[in-house]
Structures are given as C-alpha cells and as structure tokens.
Length: 120
Image 1 (spheres, helix red, strand yellow):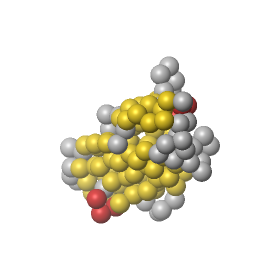
Image 2 (cartoon, rainbow, N blue to C red):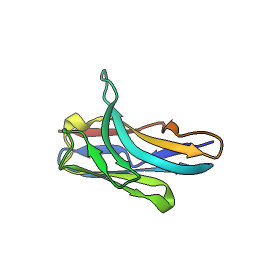
Image 3 (tube, rainbow, N blue to C red):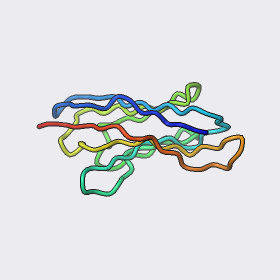
Image 4 (spheres, helix red, strand yellow):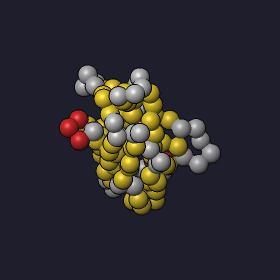
C-alpha cells in the first residue's frame, strides 16, 4: 500500500514563508507526477503546482512567482516553498501523486492534507 504524508502547514502572517513537504512510502515502482492541491472553505479543490518525472513543472496563475515546487526522487518527496503568503492562500493543502506499484498501474494517491492559515 502507498501512503503520502504531508508536513509543514501552520499559521503564518501575510508576507511570510512556509515550506510543505510530502513523502511517499510503500511498494512504489515509479512516481510520474507529484503535486499539491488546495481547498479553501466553500471552494473546490484546485491545483497549486505539480512536478512531472520529465522535470517539467506546472503552477496555477495565483501562485506563479511566489511558490516553488521541487522533488527529491531518491526520497520520493515533494516540497512546496511558499513565499509572500497572502490571506487568500489559506486552505487545506493536499499532496497528490501518480504512482505505479508492483501490483497496479499508475493511479492517483492523496495525502490527508495540512492546513495553512495566513492572517493579514
């Protein structure tokens, strides 16, 4: 079984920085995509950023220039460095990964989420 465990959320003030990390563990054969989504109260879950196995990255327009996603493939870990935080960044942040295991084709896995609260 595969598990994604996030860490690094918490309370910040506008303009502060936070770093989220997410480690994947289990019977992993390959990880094609690792990314971060977020869901604010009353809103739908949205993509924040993702990182693909070819090295490409993708960011939502709302975080471009402020957030940076990176991966440590040796550790099956993805990071999200969040700079210049804004109150509108307040949300539960979920780690997502497209993972193939010894027993299954690539499928999506999700972490339980970590809350980021940004005060003005």
